[in-house]
Length: 464
Image 1 (cartoon, rainbow, N blue to C red):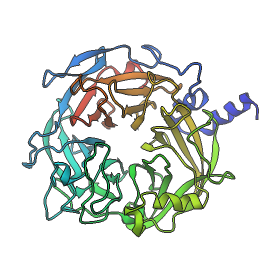
Image 2 (tube, one colour; image 1 turned 90 degrees about the vertical axis):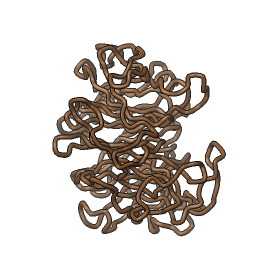
Image 3 (cartoon, one colour; image 1 turned 45 degrees about the horizontal axis):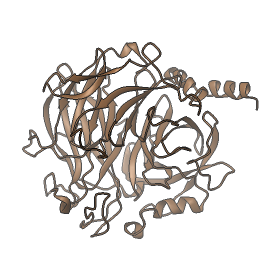
Image 4 (cartoon, rainbow, N blue to C red; image 1 turned 90 degrees about the horizontal axis):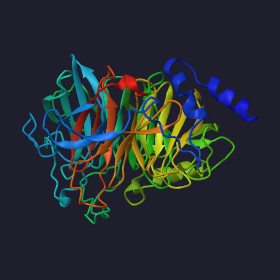
């Protein structure tokens, strides 16, 4: 296929509405000699400058001219239910309920032994020895301030990301499979010592006004979960795995909008290329046809000792390998995901999956970073109302929220200034990017110290 014909095929393969605006992401992508930066007037919003928050007066972010923000739900602040706001803010989604914005927010807490405590009601907690979970924030859409907040899920562990469903729930995912007294985290803290198995997804109804009973969705798999995205046309749930050798999964529920009824877990495989490795040597814009292989045991007993137990089942059947799949979001009829350490320079990749049928689809690399100043370690992401992508970085020192324009160029949207500037080498992860339904407000989190931000401004000037 000639280059011109390949591009023409790719352009016509996208279908429907805003999806047309993402043709450029596939057609252009990035090149080693020109990674592509969007300046003001070209899809970006211009240079960043330190900016004070409207409600606290603190200078915690650097933003383009004309943008404003409020600070919400800081770690340690007392919530309306009397509990202190947990730390380690991570994945999140925004919903509209009775004219108010509701944020359901993950907390990636690991173990009681590391100085944390169970955040909620012992009667509703899944595991009394696990300190993770979710909180729900009710936000006034005019003032962008919290009117009420409370624990909505507790007794889970390492709640990293997740995703919203079309039926008004948030799926919170555990990024751990350990049970009792196993291993240490990257800081040397003992993790584990739990009373129950972990490595599951949990569902939180957005309309719940208090903590819900935590019930693991075991058929969705027990592995090192990161995020999920739901295709509203089919209710198929797509799932990412945060490991150096990771799979991309989908869950086919037995009953629509009822994940607790069970279903089938599958892993993506590249057609006619069993065991394909996407981590290196990929070409931006080149589509690959894919299929799906069954996972016979989604909840293996030995997952606490081998957190790749599910992945290995898929690999044995020809499944494909990715590099730390993290962010995952549905938009424009496609699923977008980030491979945090993917690419020839280990700086990150952005992938797109387009369903073609019940058991087939098309996988395309949209962007691969070749310069850490352009993009480094993309994690959570979301699709903007104008069809671009919002990418949160998970790295140290200078950390940004970046935008990816519909013609495949990166730009800086936010720089994180929160935390001690003298703390060199400390991760300052940004996470949880999500737009309000009306597209006026972008919410996102800093993980350490934990805080949520509401950002708004002249979105019409650029591609988000």
